[in-house]
Image 1 (tube, one colour):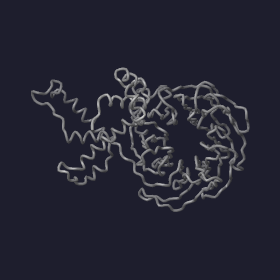
Image 2 (cartoon, helix red, strand yellow; image 1 turned 135 degrees about the vertical axis):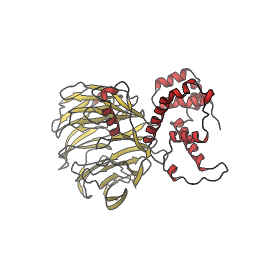
Image 3 (cartoon, rainbow, N blue to C red; image 1 turned 30 degrees about the vertical axis):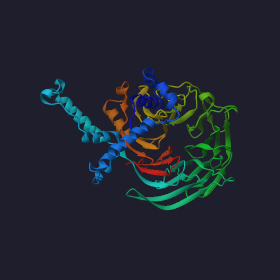
Length: 504
């Protein structure tokens, strides 16, 4: 088996395009015959081929350790098996099998002589730092039947709910002992369907008190359940799959949105629809947005036409404000109660921060090259976001720029979620990988360096806490959810079971 330099260049060029590095791809294209290869191979080489080949190469390098030179299976090395297969580890294995020739004595270069011992000491320190940041594999401690969404009860840490693909959701009460779940009780929440096609659960949300759970399904029906699985009410008005549910702080009202961008305000006590908003025009194919948010217990923000953000009060159908700036679908709306600022993100590749009483955004962040899939406040100064361009970025209001970045395997990040304690950030990718970043460690490093202003022109790298890879090929991450203690993460896949990961 062999690969030519031109074929390798083509794979690298494809990778640069898939990762959104258009300028780099164009520069490589100008100096090679890539367009000729593209005409011949573009329909035969799938997305992510370069990454896939590199991963197989890492696996091959690791597998060499399992067989001795005489063809016999090598003795089991438990310590080695417990480590994850990574590029760094594969290179280290290859280095051990085929060590580099090092010049010494009179054959050594002058700059490699003893006068450079300080450089060697520095390299050793960097190596130790690399060993300390070894990426661990997150442990799966529980699995549930396939579903698109899951939620932990905000008040009862031992109560977990997930939506299934058979027109039902389930709630379990469990007891955890040394990382093992013991299911004590299970309640099935059924959404009847009148057709042969399953009415899959598309979203769910616990009330702030944890006493009620609202579930939404593909046909638009919403059902309110008690924590013990008793049906309390049926909310019928949506005619399309519900994609977002938000309770107001005093849990007297619920805000819901569907894929047709119909937004409804409900009285949570009676199940009555109080207001209905539908700005989307009949001939429009593009979604206005996929997120909504409460600003206080009576005021809320929803997507409007042409990337606008509409601010309403309960009971008043005329908007009290209209924020203009974005030009495409809104993907995130998040209000910070501490600094009284509204964060928004969009498919126009920007994040914006809005102050009350001002129709113009106070901050605009540019840097992502593809649609932003998630954004959230870390604190009053810092925002974290992730995008389909496979990057994670931290932004500072003080610096008005990115202060830390990370890139994941070159594949699109479909979803992200900041932990409740704001110390960890999880990202789910197109190839089923879940990467968890150590936000707490990054913030401590920023503090030691004197604050975000010290790295405004040289963004830091976000440290990785651990990762997990689905074994089901072709299954991508569709939903993430942290428990309230921020030490367990549930992951929903398109073609796989719901898994619970330990992130301790």
